[in-house]
Length: 236
Figure 1 (tube, rainbow, N blue to C red):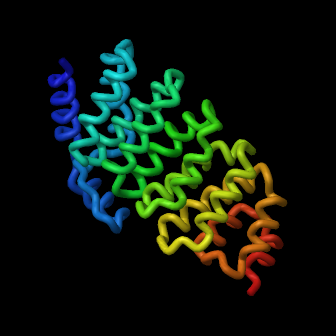
Figure 2 (figure 1 turned 90 degrees about the horizontal axis):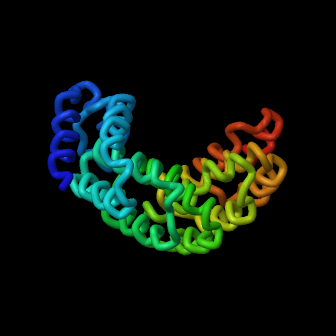
């Protein structure tokens, strides 16, 4: 039914591709990236343009279209898919978490895909259904590093708004000694955002764990602290 729409999106992405943008994107991802080379602002305009054609469809139909875009593994198509998914957030239901988990498992293969899906859609889901915070804690034990990063980055925006402090600290505990640099950066970022509303609690957490916390995570966590607190946290 919507094959033409997907084809039109791909044609528009192709016509907006730029080799320099593609080369710049490649430098950002150690894992490698499969992309057209379209600027983020242009991708967002394309997402908006075509969402207007499907906005009245059932959520299930829109999610199927998103999956069709995700299958290609092209970065800009995933960005459009995740933008559409987030625009459906007022219609999320508990069973949608299984869909998001399936997408992380099958289609998330770099930090930007992880963050785009989890900062927005999964975060909105958790704010609507906080009883599923326990699922994020299960993700911290996954062999898949993208699930482990997802557990932390899902709480970045809620944490910035002062929510879920106990859960933030519990997830940080689970990821504290993680071997993967992107997971370390992910939970450090989560702690940094939590510190905006709960500075003293995050400072105490960092001071308690700084002897074992990887320096990458520690630096992220204290980045916005006052200079004197940063200095204390960095002391060996």
